[in-house]
Image (tube, rainbow, N blue to C red; front, side, top):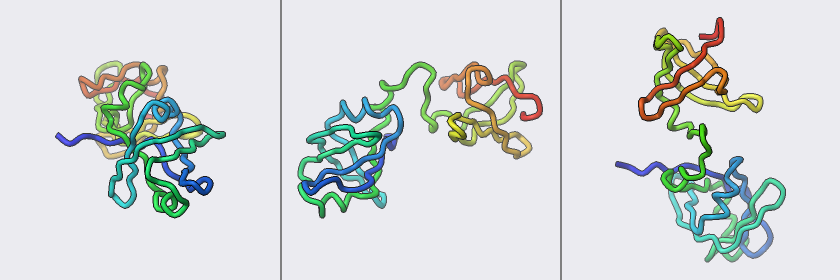
Length: 170
């Protein structure tokens, strides 16, 4: 079985002259970045293992110095790379009722009366609100806010989501 690798940030640019990089990261990944010693940078589908030598946060970015990256030229080579970690290393950072999008896509969607409404085809953050894209049996795509009010139950083990459908949307 192939190990799933998830992106937690992206190298945006170099920072200073000693090989540091400026990293934009997904909200909630400050703790992950603070606790890992190594990470993978992937650019053009080629992973590179990097050891974190120093890390600090500045505004909404991380400034990282990797071991063996000691100049602007070396740091520029990493620009645009996605920083990734194996999913198995990230699971422990999830809060209760938090899920990875890759785990939600493909789940069957049922209403409170156990009628299958379709399956999750995607998840997107729209105006600060996570939203499920649900593809119905007829092929139409419907949107549903991913909140406890509308999605009271998610069971990854059973491969299903139970929803309180919004009148007219599902």
